[in-house]
Image (cartoon, rainbow, N blue to C red; front, side):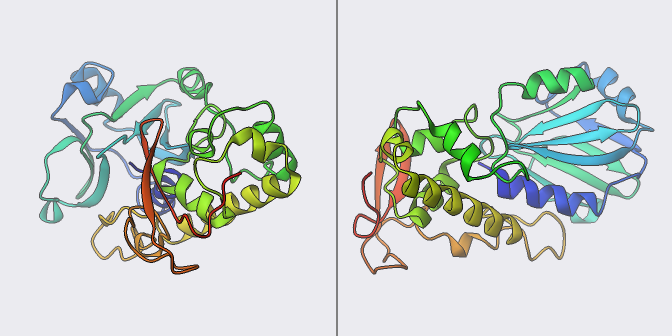
Length: 273
């Protein structure tokens, strides 16, 4: 599932392509992927323009010239692709938004969605999300306050969108590895230690910033000639690396289940808190 770095990469790349281009057509192949009748959805978009692309957690928010918002959540299996008809991906699409000769293809929106909302509805839809980990207002002190009083495991805390927004299965494991902590560590034990909390905070910052700058781990390119998207996949230290050698100590990476979520870690150099 795309996480903060993947969606931030999409935001940056799409902002270079679609801003202020008139929307010339809309194709909806799956009604359940949108939140309005197809005709009403299309009428709102055709002739409109995207003036700004925002990322909030794992969502992209396309700000339209008429004040409305298109809110995208790709969920599991979702992807987007920008290209001409000749470059159409060999995948079924649920929604297509046309900008003249180019189209933004929405792929795999079986669990995901593309909703047309007002500004107020968008704010309400995002109201339950925790703060952004890379926000300029986020610092070690604020991060420590987010952990105070929390119980459970490090894994479940990091992926809880109500606590902090945008982190999922992949980057929770990568952050835990960078911090030298097992994903099964107790959050309350970390919160009680200033040293561990600061180490976790700096690990979160470095992993997410590096992953975003390297295009995230999802390997399908966003457009023809895109060599950036997915390039972080080869740099993942533990995620989906079960049985491989740890890049830090040479130990063997293991996979476990933590409250129904898979987690990858090195038992040799990641410690239980």
